[in-house]
Image 1: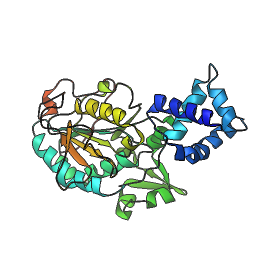
Image 2: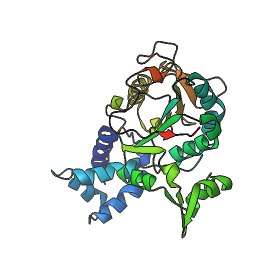
Image 3: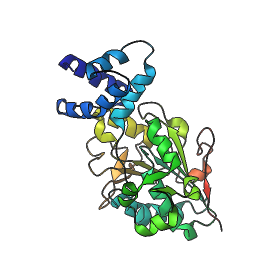
Image 4: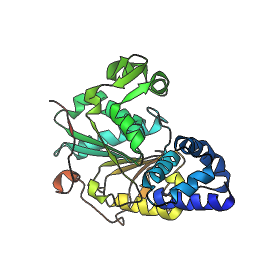
Length: 300
């Protein structure tokens, strides 16, 4: 791959997905795209780049983008965000939404489903407190392949050993040969949809809580700010945003403010952020997304 081809590929990936690749990331391109080239019957990355430049190669181009933007995930990753969810976010929402008894959560980089299913397990663990509530978890990702895996909810022994407590494995999964599948009642709690964060996502509706972890680090600052400001428009004044440990809004935008002593947890800013400013989504007619909605109803 020549320097010119590398520059073209970087520009292509940034336009299609927002991914920003520095010069030292050439190894990442080689490790992820050489298998794509071989599968397409192409001998080199140069041949792959030439091929996706040709008219009518949109499927191959999409495969290239997905290969470069697919990131690993595991259950209860980093632990802290899920502790914040259980100890801070959920109690506050139970109090603030006591009248409407409805909660909407968006995992903006769902990958193979471990994050949204981890949240679903947290909610199931708190089922007694959620009697009569309707809860929706929406997971989105750019990659069709990872979303299909997430929908199936089938994981290897290695995958369930990464972060998943044994009691949760036995309670919420069924062993199928050498793999484990999360139970159907858990799968039904999560709705999945393909989504590119660079595009308009306002049609998803309003959310009480947004998890957008380990995604913004791949974007330039301008793109980060645009995405954060669009997310702020989709949240109430008491909504929560969760970012990855290496991500922050500080120095970028004031539409969200960091919560004291809560690493990675943010709330909508001091009132200057545009968008919904009601403290309760239940009173807003646009709370549900366009299209079919899947809420988990917790029994009384």
